[in-house]
Structures are given as C-alpha cells and as structure tokens.
Image (cartoon, rainbow, N blue to C red):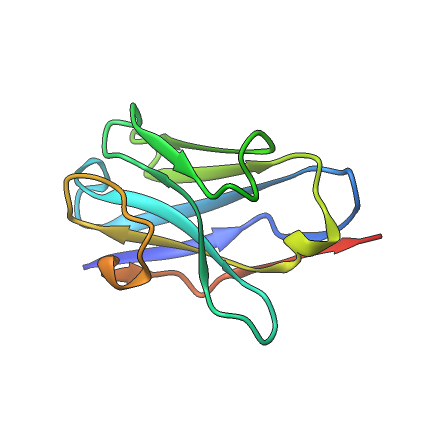
Length: 124
C-alpha cells in the first residue's frame, strides 16, 4: 500500500511557475514508478509526466514538454513537478500516481495508487 499526498497547487498568472510535490508513505518509495496526471473540468484524466524508480528515465506529454520537469528524491519519499511558462489550458486538478512496474506508463490503468489531487489554476 502506498499513500500519496499532493501539495503546491494554487492560482498563478499565465507565464508563471508552480512546483508541485507529492509525498509518499507506505511501501518503499524507491520501488515504485511515479507519474503526474491532470484532469480539467469535463475532460478525461491525462498523462503529464512520468519517472522511473531511479529517476534516470523521464517522459512528458507533448503539451508540457520543455515547460515541465518531473524529479524525485527517494531519500525524502517525494516526487516533484516543476511547471514553468504556465498556460491557461494547464488549469486542472493534478494527481500523482504510483505503480510497481519496471517503467513509467502513460496509461491511467497502469497505476495502482492515486493521490487526491491539487488544484492548479492559471489565469490569462
């Protein structure tokens, strides 16, 4: 069992930055793959970024590539999402997720555990 708690969301103007954090507890953090997903009102939850257990392998949705960066600190049991150059279309609830696979996946059903989410609102 892994419990995930996100923080760091808020209201920011277009072009601004936010850093999301996801603190994990339970099973050994270094043994799980982590990812960030987001869900905007009326839309399906979509993959944003994923990171391997070691942190050496990372992937991003095309819509955020070059603006967002995912990282993890296994000593602190935490995964981060640095979001720069935010656009109004980035507005969504951001969820972190974990799974015991060997590599991150872009598919929602691959993840076993989810956090409650943190709201990110980008004003124009």
